[in-house]
Image (cartoon, rainbow, N blue to C red; front, side, top):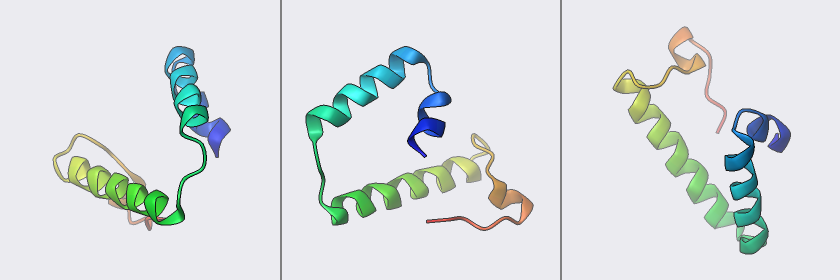
Length: 64
């Protein structure tokens, strides 16, 4: 999953995020789940505004 995520970014952005991840270290599961929920909410809002296209518009289910 990480490889796919980083593959879709510029090498500079990828390196910056990798460095941030190293500095942050391990996180609590509840913090990770909250961040995931926030990201899904943002994606849904952007989709409603027509700024993002996801598979949900074609009837595909979200994976949360």
